[in-house]
Length: 621
Image (cartoon, rainbow, N blue to C red; front, side, top):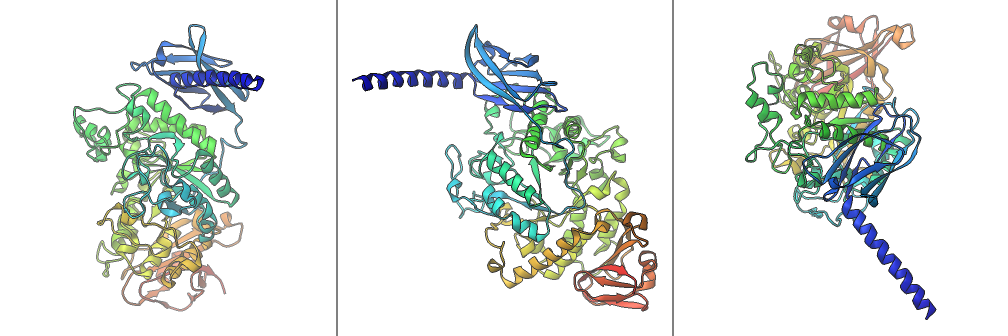
């Protein structure tokens, strides 16, 4: 009887506690960011509070000054600006009060930053970036293929469906990526994307503070980064400030009418991003490009709204700090509000001066792309600075997409395309920081256009030895194909197999071994990372260039010089060494790092076999 009485009493207490917790959760549904760090450059933190009719309540914060309190036209939001400067790590409770009664609360924590967090090392021209799509790379945990609350469930038989890849799969194959010779990982977005179809690509994010449960958890991503760092690998996060998912909880309950760009009817972006700098552009054309929605499920975010801009800045800083990231890639950079995205970038760089960020500026003219790089002489003509350290070299990609199928050089065909691309480098503030690539998750697969290993060797040698930061797309290293004409899913095939010798066919193994040898050689080559570029006008579809470091930079009496030869001709070609005397300098001998073949420059000429690449390290006998 006594036991029953005690049980009933505790059951009653538990029931009351559950009611209180339920009431609190109804009042306060979201707090973003949920925490911050001490000693931050951004020590004033805008905290978003969200819940039904929350604006009717009073808010107080224990131990932190409220500098500003904004209640928008939507009564479900309160924005607090808190001052954290000079505070120590610990919990600072945010309390929601109805008169004097606490109806909800949140322990807002200030955490200790990691040492050297502000001046973290980032990716540079020393690195090789390995781009992968988590859903298509490897399935490390089949139990999370489906998740409660997610609209789209796994269906590997559907090309555009979710195939089950996840963060554990990536983590399990970090050693493979390192062995390949890559040093940095860029994953396409892995945050929650709760669209009912085509959610695998992740670019319609429905929660900016939560890893998609079909990929894992916030903690599993943090663990992946830690494991990568232990292996000497860096991790880049893909940022998408231009658009969110139409299923984002905040899109379903807009904080302000100006949180997104709105129209009387659905208006898609014109994608004419040249209107951002066109001195003669009509304002209506600028608006059509910058404010139109990227797609029906991807509303265009209005970064000129100061509350949203601060939210985006803080969200990016939160992930860098929380997960200890090494860099960022920014999707559709030139589609954003030009001035606002520059503020976003500047704010990130103020917090992390050494951080590298690469923006996707998908244009086909060097001056247009150069406009978006930090300290651009082109942007300066319009008094504009994006503060974006790097952009993707799409014009080089354009050249690669065409050059290897052109058997005759012509005036502007064949490998002349590469030469002409680099002649435009004077337009860039820092050409050595451009991202160079033969393909990515949005382009035609290189090995589909060029199914020959010889063409792959030529192209990979180019991006591995020219100026810039090379990026390879998962599967390239085993000859993976896929047609953009068939659909995006075909250029994003499953890679679940292929990361071990036993899983690869002889042809795949040949691709893999070449890639591994080239990238692992590159790791230790300061002359490739930092050296100057000297190029010669191509002749007979043969492109010759040098990378060199002067003696004062090599701690040696001699310069460090590498000669690269790309013979795109269908026949053997003879090179007269004296033509390249400026690059060869006083050296009389060289060895190809790919084949160990030797070259004697004291001879008058040298024969270069058809469709062959050489990387010759110059020496003296």
